[in-house]
Amino acid sequence: MTGAQEKPIGGDDKYLTLGIDREVFALPVEHVQEILDMCEISRLPYAPPYMAGMIDVRGRGVPVLDLRARLGLPSIPVSAATRIVVLDLPLDGRRLVIGLIADRVIEVTGLDDNTLQQPPEIGTGWRSDCITGIGRRGPHFVIVFDLPKLFAAERIEVTAPPDVAA
Image (cartoon, rainbow, N blue to C red):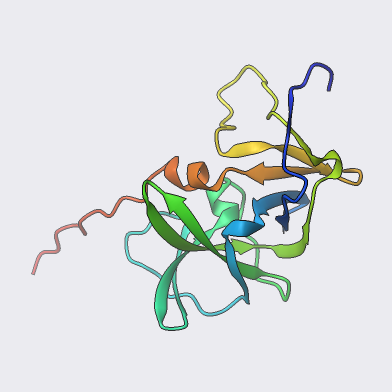
């Protein structure tokens, strides 16, 4: 890609890489609290489709989002590689602890050349605001999420249940 702007990242920047379908995504490792094997998730009524529900993490209820659904991808069955990545994020002056379901966790790594390219401009309404940039790891592109924007882009709204006639 010629003319693409690149921005340097710190030489010590580390990322947790995740596989979703055939793509590789990255999360800044400083936000990763822990990685869990897939477990039972309690569904929440009237939650948006990307909200899988809640899990218990050492006595604390943690909401879990299905990253595939959040990205508009079709669901797939849970496999032995499916993981829940628990994140601790700064969001609007508070801390948000949230879990993300990923098809697989790959590794903690740096990115080649310690640079990120800006997301491509394609002239349509494609939402790239939740992407910090695109890096490389070997021959593969790695899409780095801007986590606060990924979750702030669309607030989870709690709506009242429909009236039920008694």
